[in-house]
Image 1 (cartoon, one colour):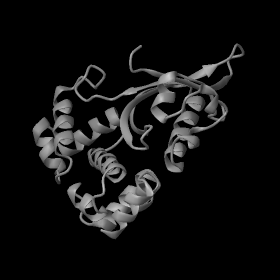
Image 2 (tube, rainbow, N blue to C red; image 1 turned 180 degrees about the vertical axis):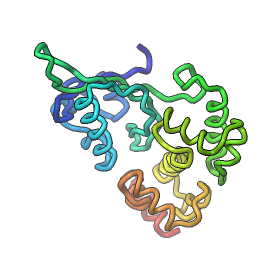
Image 3 (cartoon, rainbow, N blue to C red; image 1 turned 30 degrees about the horizontal axis):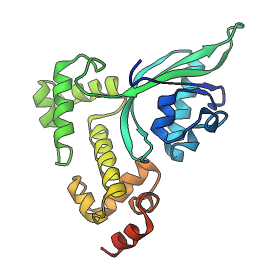
Length: 231
């Protein structure tokens, strides 16, 4: 299936099978490089913890997690949006022995979305304007619902509030700029509608586990880092 990546893990969330697409996405060449390892090998600690919590919930309840929208790391060490589905693996004794599932790119407005045309309209507007300050009340007016109802729809579809969805988009985009440009961090913060660099730093660390400066240092070559730090 095009663009659909497969994975399977044991009860300790260690990989036991990974598709070629997943390996390409995280920059590995052979399945053996991930067999026996956990998500902490390819994601920051806070992201790996969240993934582990989802694994445990699926194994405990035996209820599948269907099309969870989440930002995952790619080979470039930047994030993009994906839909994750997880189901429990059960052996012949009806014992849960792990989780398996799929990961595929998330494309708002495509057939994999909620089917709610008003919600899709709001999502499209956010993705075009997330660098500006957007009031939830404005978005709710576009969908002809209350702010509370819109937040409920976002929770049902994306497992996050409207405001968190906007912030995650800003973090993703700003991370791409940190990794690929020499723009000063303060400028990137303002360009992504954060009040100042300190607010940006706090939010960026919350969602990535790293400060913007550390994130950039780990991804830019030394010459560009020195130049950037002088700006």
